[in-house]
Image (cartoon, rainbow, N blue to C red):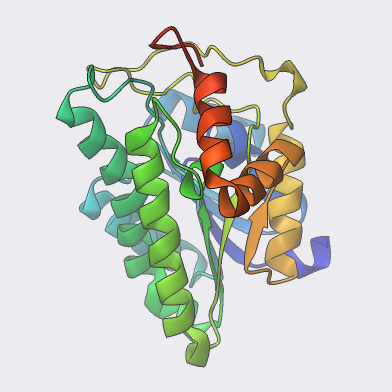
Length: 269
């Protein structure tokens, strides 16, 4: 697989933690030229220290800001000459019941998870079309099944998948490959950074991550799927089961999901 990515220019948004960092590490090991971004300059500095190479370009950026996304793509093209693959990985979750949550939570999640992908893709598009490249969106099982306590997150991922499906068909004649991946429950900082009802970070997760797929394993599956030009990728047995059950047995899935996430009217996971 390493030969496929050698010398390709890959942009990975949100590359300082979890799946994003695992993607950056793997791509650099395979000889790719990588651009990544994050909001934490210290984490970006640490990443550069781990990979002291001209093959890594980093930038402090918030993907919810259109100008940041534009500058990220412009500097990548200036630094490496173009863009072959864009992996829209940056994202944020939320954990709050609708009756408790302020509307700022929903806007912030949508700005990052949906509009961030729109901005980055739009400003990378000309170069990707020129190189007949690949656009990837890291989505979630929540893009197939609405999850209680994550209604804003689910909405953003439904929007993301619908948008990617639309541009996939738009870009067929341009030779551009578009795909979306749904990691399922994977060890990642996204749950620790999930927003609470006041749109602040929780800083902790109620999930037991010891039995989840590792970020490194998840990154490996994503890169294999890019190489094979898959349309979609749903990972983990729980993820595949949830998508299947929701498609064919939606009312039963309602009850199962409710039992998993809510107890005595309170959000437990």
